[in-house]
Amino acid sequence: MRLEGKSALITGASQGLGRALALGLAEAGVKIALVARQHGPLEETVHEIRHRGGTAYGISADIGDKRAIYPVAGQAAALIGPISLLINNASTLGPTPLPLLLDTDCEDLESTLATNTVGPFRLIKAVLGSMMLRGEGVIVNISSDAAVVPYPRWGPYSASKAALDHLTRIWAEELSHDQDSPVRLFSVDPGEMNTKMHADAMPDADPATLAAPAVIAGKIMSMIRQSDEIENGARLVATEWEEACDEAS
Amino acid sequence: MKPADQPPADRMAQKLLLVDVSSKELTHGRIRDLPRFLRSNDVLVVNDAATLPGSLRAASDTDRRYEIRLLSHRRGTEWDAVLFGEGDWRSPTECRPAVEGVCVGTRLSCAEDLSADVIRVSDVSSRLVTIRFRQDGPAMWSAIYRLGSPIQYSYLSHALDLWSVQTAYGSRPWAAEMPSAGRPLSWELLRSLMRQGIGVSWVTHETGLSSTGDQVLDGLLPLPERFEIPDVTVHAIHVAKSRGGRIIAVGTSVVRALEGSMTLHDGRLVSGSGETDLKIRKGYTRQVVDGLLTGMHDPSESHFRLLEAFAEPELLCQAHSAAEDAGYRSHEFGDSCLVLSETGLGIPLAKVA
Image 1 (cartoon, each protein chain N blue to C red):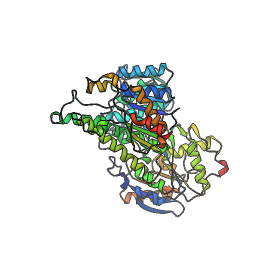
Image 2: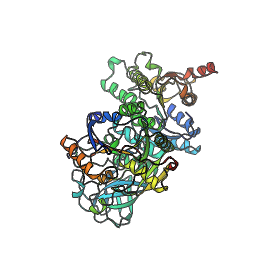
Image 3: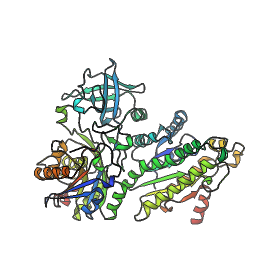
């Protein structure tokens, strides 16, 4: 998908990977609606984008709350026009330090699924129909290697991301099975990044060994640009992306 | 006809009455039969306006209570709106008290972070006003979405949530009330139409209010409305017409956008945005739309007048009685009616821009 002039909705956009994606996409000429729970950090990112000459609006909302979904989709479309790029990046780890599953409250599993799986599902439902009608769209669901590897203590988060990956595949399968789909969906494992979420989960990790969010955002932008050539519903690993491109060239 | 008093559990099972204008035949079916009633090269045109949470509660500085119903986003912070006096949606609009104490300069406060000044009061009705919010951009939208609810209907069993009044493809929030003709269209159905070679295109049209509670104002409905027609839709209509396909509008708002554009541009269909005050009724010569998928309308409604531009009143009344006998439901969540003229009412190719 050509990026310039498009309208993107990014959740969890006030920090970490979401913020880096918002800055990078705005730089590429994309109008951005940024969603995050905290108004303050959200507005800081919005101001930074505008300061650099980009177009951005902040929408304070909790994606885990079902009443927030249509308001987010409606405000975004009112402010930047029909959405052609949705990045479901917001997620929660659940309580930290991460407990064993046996010690995890059922309610914490439910609320993790609400934010990481059901929230993206609802938001996709709210914008995918318009993308299908208009014949263009890319949806990126931010996943994790925890969706594949059963790391102890990562139970709710892992299960929520595994479910999101599988929903992505099924969505793509349904859209592509008997007609060419104008909308591409894929999930991306961004790898370990130097973010607040990583520090919350693994406080002892050495930041020097972790990727900068801006670097991973650049790879995801390259995936979006090449989305026509990516198998619909694919699960992509950001750290392998460059190698894949090198092989192709 | 009895109104449907709640959104249906299975929209594909909703009833659909085919009114064939040339044969004068009526055929009963379900909305899932739509692909059977259309043919390849036909184009279905939907209105992709999302529905606003456009009902806001407000108080004036003298503590009078009002309901503001947002009608049309003029520009920036300016909106046309219809005001209702105290009371709620459980009273039919015609039973709501008249609006008193509103003049240019009246301040209407919804909450600490949303208030508006009345900047114009219509000569026709004191209910019809133009307001200017004191908040703009994201602050205005965020407060409207937090404080507003969709316009409610007194015949419903319970209040509607914002998600209950959206179509499966809505995008920008331009509709004061749901473009309800498109509500039964699921993606299962739209994709089966596409598989059959039937096009699905769109316009965005600002659908206004169905009722204002003021007889004089109701008599003027629909008021001028904004629309936008994309290049791809003009192209799809052009191609369909050249292949003998029919243009089927989903909802009266789509008829108004397409015919309105033709009227504004001397009989040419032109992409881009505009505003139309076109009233379509018996005797209006359609220039582009060949058929209409719509809800069930009583002969007393203004929508019924528009249907008379597609079929003789006798046939429409006969269809209405047949539907009533067969247990069809009316209003926003009710059953559907497809009025189809054979072909040939289309525009000559050269006139499509």
